[in-house]
Image (cartoon, rainbow, N blue to C red; front, top):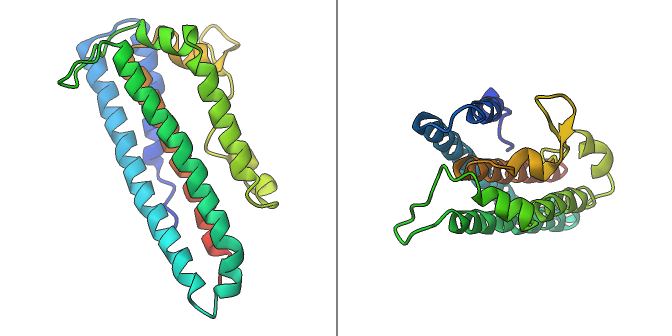
Amino acid sequence: MALPKEPRQKMINIMYLVLTAILALNVSAEVIEAFKTVDKSLQGSSVNITTSNSILYKSLEDKLKDEQYKAQAEYWQPKGLLAKQYSDEVSKYIEDLKLELKQYASLKEDGSFKEDNLDASTRLFETGGKGDLLKAKLDDYKKKMLSIDSSFELKFAANFPVNTDPVPSKEGGTKSFTTGYFHMTPTVAALTMLSKFQNNVKNAENTIASYIHSQIG
């Protein structure tokens, strides 16, 4: 029931890193369009994973009604609902951040905003402190997901899809989460990064939900 681990997701992440490096030299229309393409791919991937997760949760619910699997399902199905709840909460939080970022970038009634604005993400995430809050939310999400069952910490912690480690710097060393992802980052790139975190959350949810489903029967 789990989605296959496709190289496509890795390619999307690599594209983001390459485009970010290009932005240090030039915020061109071509680079902006490239970021929009990556963002669209990430959102499409998240939709597909959401569909897969919905199938898993429906199957877990069905197994509660099957005498053959009922006892196991009564233990595991509530854990699946917790994974969904935690994932929905943090995904909604990130979606709200996207809207707030667009507002900082002069969002208009027709939905347009300054995609190449270099100041909006800095004001929202650094000056406004939303970068540290986002990191805290993602760290808390990981902690709660791994605490759903006593076996999850050992089983999933090392390769959990959601990661807030410091960002490598081109000068060597690392940058903090907020500085590395959002300092003087064009709005369109910051939105793409937020979509990436949402996609990571969906992947984490699928990893947990798939395992839960596999434990029944």
